[in-house]
Image (cartoon, rainbow, N blue to C red; front, side, top):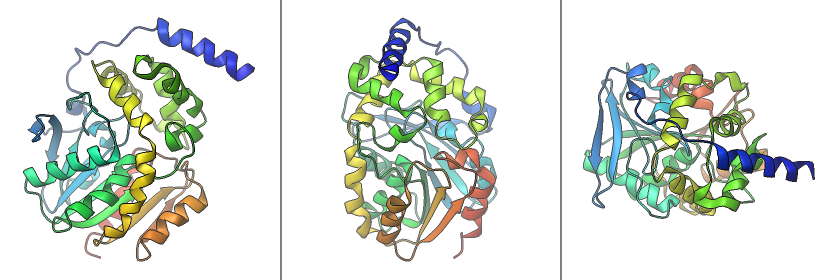
Length: 305
């Protein structure tokens, strides 16, 4: 009953809350001097990305409800060793938000097209959460372009609407999307609570970045895209069937307090018996943001292995 009352109280707050302004300058200027660019895919969808650094190509793939700025702390630690590309997945950040089903397959095809249209080769593909799953599925479509894979906390598990995020300390809030669908309004305190539940230490979620996520989330069509990702959560589980196609070397990185349980991690590891596996202590689901130095050291240290 207490949870039910809390849900109705929160629902009232959602319906009463206003939307943030979208007129602020581009957030990426806070962490990189590189200009953001756009790439038009064959479908007409424009994808925003940033390219920084010099060296072998490395592509960063973020998770749901975030954007390329999710890597504001990791990318600068890599740009001295790699030419880093970070992109906004369709429906996220500054990329277009078409009225489509945001399944793993749709995202995988978009990332693959991004790589081929820019003619990127010998790519180190790095992703977190759903980006971590994409890092393990895109290479099967483009084995000639992917040299190495680093998958952080792959989001390939779950047992109810939305998937693994429901295990977050505040993950029950995601269930509101199952009630209100794309009409759900997401004020700052909800975004903060859900994302904060993915950290070992929630203070590691920077307030300016949280504000940017809130601002981005107010854009037209964003809530529909977010709801679609949650609604299609089982496609990220089904993506495990594609893992055997991978030929490139794999590194798996888990936060000690990731939402996945030990058996789910072991299942993914069994799909890649030769993978290098790391567990980063005092880290939750958003390891690239919570422990960027450790992650960068693993990526750079394994570059030539």
